Image (cartoon, rainbow, N blue to C red; front, top):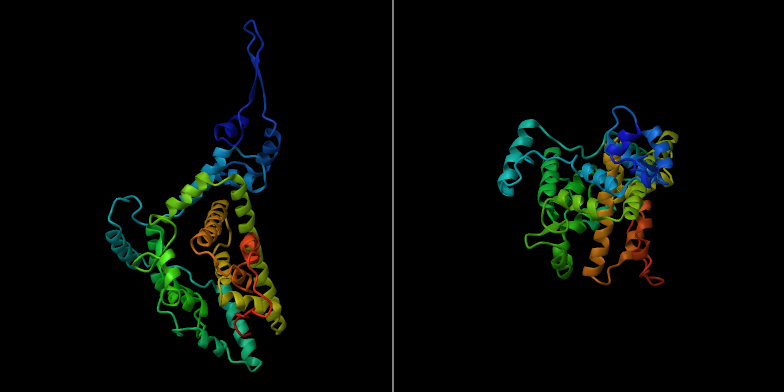
Length: 368
């Protein structure tokens, strides 16, 4: 078994101890880190376990998996993201997207925008709010939305938009706004979606720094987004990957705990702090992490690694924007519901840099 683990690069090879002389052979000894790895493999390895999954689980526990094995396991996680037509990558992207649209229509492929558990919580909050005599959704939100109204995006449209973003590494602001609205379909207005859609109009000088000429938000260099994640998997320092792995786990735990707490309030017939936290997130960006968590019921190691890479990329983009656009109001990232708490903790260096002056704080939370 030791030889199998070594052949799969889950254990480092023995350290040579030199020759015994006179044709008596040589000696070797295990690397110092092998013992802890051996115990971890005894717990996590086994028949049918994929070596990359085992490597990720060991890495997640802080065990000293060989560096090259760790990077290879994260890169393999990116390879689980497949798009029809990947076997012919030289095809013109526009032609490929046309073929992909036909394939999605023919195969009936869709994306789950709002998982059933989230829908039940939304409905429960609306029911209790109306029973208490409150208009729901809050009508006040309409004043903060330049184009209030329901989304026109269908689950099939979302599938095509997601695939196109993977292939091109870009997404239009209109598509982003439409998908944000589609992921909160009961809302009469969506201020965050509106902010995205009106970026070019509201802050043209900043938009020029982050958008392409055709109003696309580029996820780094314009190319297949998976190539960027593979590059990150192959070059990111192991301590950064470990921190992102831990943060991704923290986001998932926060999301599941929030669901449990809101459901307890709904069962008791009383909306409280959990319901407020839920609604702040649903009308901002933290709610997207909740929806993503609820879509992945089992969360295998490869998905955990992929979520960690995406998170690490996003954190890097915040710092890239800080270099491109000096003076950003990073303290707004501390607004309730804007980011999951574990992600907010990773951005404290930006958030705490320019706190608002006394008396200038603006409460941008949706009315509760």
